[in-house]
Image (cartoon, rainbow, N blue to C red; front, side, top):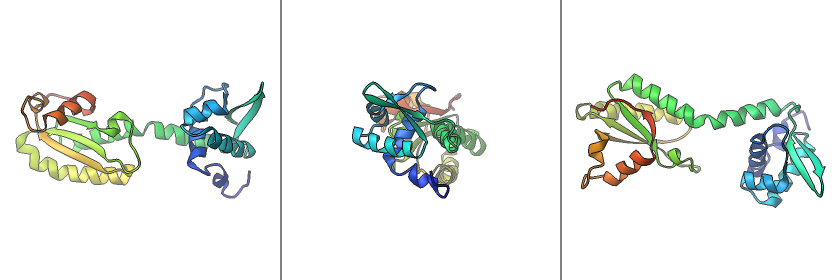
Length: 205
């Protein structure tokens, strides 16, 4: 491993990153074959083999022969291991970080709002690059203008902190009325009720 910019040879491609993530998710002391890691990482066997070969050359990954196949695990004594481990641990907590951030900001800026949910791809854990973060806020009718103004500030903060675009819909509740038959937007609110992840839950006005 070179001592100047070694990450250039570790995080070479997306396949390298995904294979490292799959390795990090393995139980300590339990190696996996190249084919197993390819499936876990969601990459082709060829791409996984190429990445594993390069990572083994850098010493980040240990390769040991078992029968006719090599089995791999992270080298937890490598100088870069703790830094890589911290990054993977950090990314697994991002959704909870977002929920806590939104909950805190809504409580601070809009104390009268009692219900809020993230929904859509962020709730389903199938976001893609460029996906919006969908947020539903239920406010009282007399607060709607203030909610709209404060939500713009929250959207800007989410963009700065998480790098994503917050797409917010605001309605006056309670959610039981929003999902009533023949109510405009009923299907959307039924989906939010079904799949939404609560950001705030409380007594609705």
